[in-house]
Length: 256
Image (cartoon, rainbow, N blue to C red; front, side, top):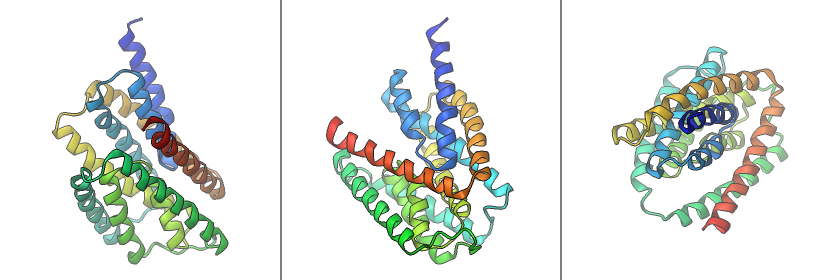
């Protein structure tokens, strides 16, 4: 069998698995990016191809959450999208300020803060699934600004970071949080994808194959997230945060 066909098949399967994770919590890029490197694709195309996968997974998951009433399309959400896009563009412009090493240091500090915020949230017993409160503008807008900037400036784990920020500052059901966090990841990924596409940094054979795999995986992932106990979804976020920490430490102290 032709090596190219084998690579396409491996990539398709990898996109399904990574997009299941992306749809539930985020962090699927920790599978798809190393896979692209393993397949030997040119480095300047890797982020562009990966954004096709992330965008497809985020759009699909957000749509499923919206259709199931977990996300309200209103003025507050649309304005948060505008803020997120604006800050993502600003973050991208600022990304040259820090070297990769200092970006990883910043990311490590952020992850430690997220662990602290999660511990304080549990201590205050804020995660009450019987509470039907909705996200308020004073929570939505600052989160959109922070996540938009982070997504453009660096990017890994956007949904995970958004989830823990909202968990700390707002007492809302877990799946409402998941849906909103995924919508922010969707809009920031879409803005980045458009930029990469305009600059010709997407190999569309891998992009289109990955798009199909990402659609399938994210549809499965979003469905699973809505069916299982919300406490298990929250546990999945905690697991991904630990994996995120281990990956950052590896990049910082082993590869650097």
